[in-house]
Image 1: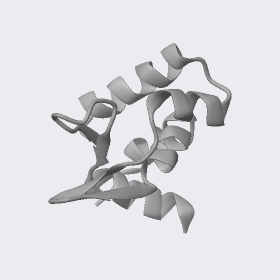
Image 2: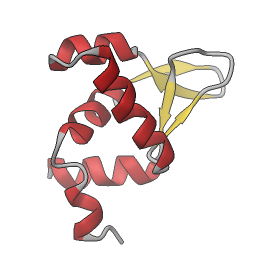
Image 3: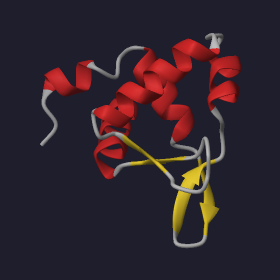
Amino acid sequence: MIEEKELDLFLTDNYKVLSLMNKPCYLVGGTYTSITQKEIADALGFNIMKANSIIKRLIEMGYVHAIEKHRGRYIVTEKAKAIIEKIER
């Protein structure tokens, strides 16, 4: 069950970044985001440092995992997908 407190984290720039990252591109054995930190920053009007900071926070909180051997590519977790789905309803 998603708590309101957890949902509030994504009614900010965190959600904007996560939403862009949730648009998948396929890789054998799983999915990864097709968008880089620079592309996220450009699309949202952020500088690269802000995008990097948000992505690091999302990783620390368990909403995104970095993919080994695919620099700058990330997997959006099921936990994050549930929050995105709830927000977009």
